[in-house]
Image (cartoon, rainbow, N blue to C red; front, side, top):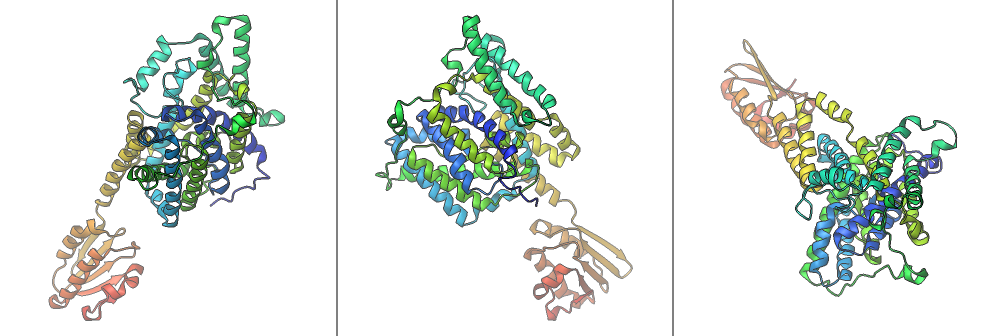
Amino acid sequence: MTKSPSILSSWRADLPASIVVSLVALPLCLGVALASGAPLFSGLIAGIVGGIVVGVLSRSPLSVSGPAAGLTVIVFDAIQSLPSYQVFLAAVVLAGILQIAFSVSRAGVLSEFVPSSVITGMLAAIGLILILKQVPFAFGYEKEFEGSEKFIEADGGNTLSSLWFGLLERVTPGAAIIGVACIVFLFAWDKMKPKQGPLKLLPGPLVVVLLGVVANTLFAVVSPDLALGAKHLVQVPIAKGFDGFVGLFTLPDFSQIGTAALWTTAITLAIVASLESLLSVKAVDEIDPRRRSTDKNWELLAQGSGNIVSGMIGGLPVTSVIVRSSANVMSGAETKASTIMHGLWLLLSVALIPAVLNLIPLSALAAVLIHTGYKLANPALFIERFRQGFTQFIPFVVTVVAILFTDLLIGIVIGLAVGFVFVVARNFRPAITFAVDGEDCLLRARRNLYFIHKYELQQALNKVPDGAVLVIDLSSTNYVDLDNVDIINAFIKGAAFRNIDVHVRGDVAERTAPMINAPSYGVRFA
């Protein structure tokens, strides 16, 4: 495992990355809050807590947490069904406590069983979703909320129909000019960015956001018809003074703590948020240039703590979010200082300059997300998986397609199911080799033996003739389950009556000697 650089030594990489992530996070926080039926500021609270609180506690160097689009349906239904938003906040706090309990029970290990083909499929699917969902924003057609991952939209349309209308029928000229210019600049900046000097630290997304603000200001002066109205711009709630800002925070109401509805919401949030966080962190580890591995159980502790804090001050539930995390990785972040600073930038900007943030065109931010999406869904990734064979390519493609045409969590479940089928299929390939030369027989296990290999093992043992010398070679295994041990024991027990001399070879045989090498069976280790 590669050692992480120190926070002090990596600030030149982390500082510009944190600015990019905060720009990406800003509209996503607002969009998720809007789709959840919650106060807009609750999304910003979750983004700030995800950056600062989870960022400080997490051991993931690159993961970024905040409100997640995958929870919008659950949150919306809960807010509508519970007596008040304050009661919902109590459910968020309880969900955080449950996540800490998951951490103590070491539930984070479950993420290690997700195949890499499914993880890379999730990343590629998120990249394609970013492109498909953000193109309409880039052209001024803001029908869906920022950060939506669902194929079927609220009005009965879908991702592809919105793309069609956004490109051909609902274009806003000013937004399209800004969006296209920003996209071209970002891809050009990848090739032209200086390798030395102060401009090396200048993040391209910050440049395009500034260009978008300047361009819209010029439109208002030179060509008012091209100037963008409020619905095409970021819309951060603006408080009147310090008291007004403090008033945007909300305390939870625990008066319903004895009701089933509150606990049902809390348990649902805890399970889904934990699953999404574990998958996101696992995916970030996959694309980390240093290939560092995150302690998943500790991550559940960090996420749970973040949800407790977020719920206590009026925020939405937080999870590790792959879009923000990917933007962090693609921007060159090296340590979690980037995550923490992004939370600080969100806090300072919404507290001190909300009016300035409301000048940013959504089309400029869409360009940033499209650029990030292309990096995640790079065609080279599809080619690489294809070259690895169908056992990797098919689960990868199925995961991509399933996520595109459903949503993130459902798509991952489908991808896992297909991946599991291939795992089982691989294990059904012959695991045992049997050879006979006169009275000498060799039965060799090519790999670990599980219950699905019982029939194959029994068929091989049935071929051993009376009076033979049989070597059972388990040297290529490090595990033989009890079902197969019982079959071997049963054969050895009957071998004495058939004048068969049995030898068991391999380290696993020695480790399981009390089970296999029973004295009455007369087995000798070769």
